[in-house]
Image (cartoon, rainbow, N blue to C red; front, side, top):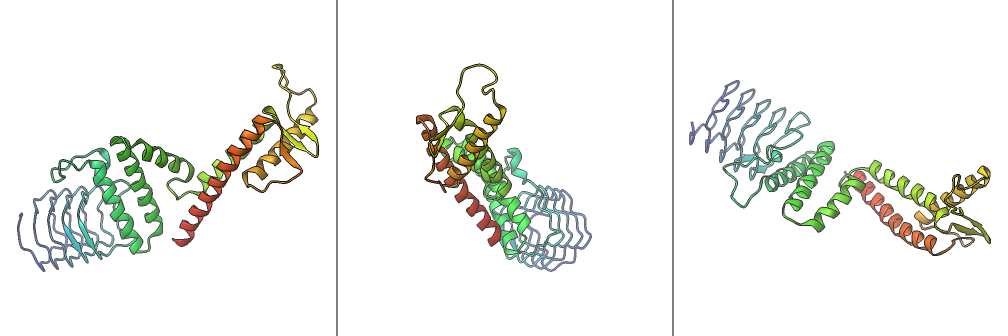
Length: 288
């Protein structure tokens, strides 16, 4: 059926599974409840087509024209969508594009140019799906496809040898889940504050109004014989870690020794970055 002209035809409930529909013109056609599973719709025209509750699983829609196509409640899981021309299609929360696109498994479509890797195609598809769901105010799906897009781009950077960008993207993933997770950031806050607070007593400790709070390393266990004294030293250093992380600082509390000063500088820098990332992620969530 390739190159067929089916404008305005009523094709409800029809089964076109695995059919060859390349370059078919379905302008204004009614495909409601039809099945096009595994069909080849590359370069097809679906302008003003009704495809509500239509099954497109594993269908090839590369380079197809999807202008004002009604995809509400449709299932496009694992369909090939690279270079599909989305222009004001209608979708809703029941439209299913799947969690991952077909190119994520390193699928090499015969339509893709030789220089276009599957991960490049996956990045393109996720970017279009992110924009499409944002246009339709579907915030949860926007977040999911943004994360998928960034992950595909991160893997593509590694594949292409862009290790600088790959490293930055990996850190962004760990710290913020690509700008989408406050929980990841709070974990990083907690690890930084507690980790530095525990280290301070071992690298010089702190000075509070002339009193030094530190552990004296003697390579014997326990490090301190007075439990109450050890708890006080640890709590004061944790308190110092908090005010260092938040860059508040107090004149009466200061690092003691070279090791503590180095750690203060590192924690202050990390704290400033993590606080800025917190504002960035919070801003993204509020704006959405």
